[in-house]
Image 1: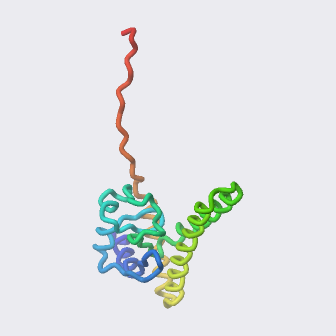
Image 2: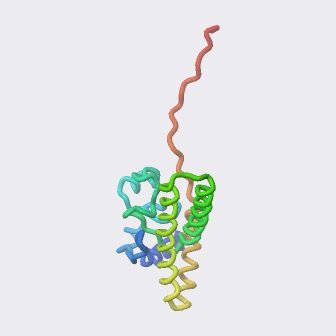
Image 3: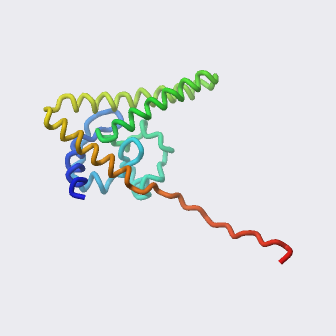
Length: 166
């Protein structure tokens, strides 16, 4: 918990918005209480935060959302997602899908590439000791997120049918 607290204190200063513009969180408490970790960054949309990240109003199209707040700890996941989107785009092209599908994938790739570029530039400008510290706290936060239980969606139980022989 202590490592996590220190990691959040450092990471809150390196948050960016969906366009890659720095948007540091005012405090560690705000970082944790006003956002929820989603697969490729934090989300600050109030109803989604309240629902623990399971109620995205725009169906997890985070790269276009004003509430998307990635930080350097999410870089590997964002870069993996960019690769997956590129593969999806190639498949869409090969299948001859509608142009709006390909354009949407390209737009997401471009948006996320801008976020990655901005984060990488911020990291490169840091002194070596600060950069190493940021990499260490990023690893701590990735481990914390990996250990967190996956949210389970509620499923209604349906009573079993009774046979007519009973």
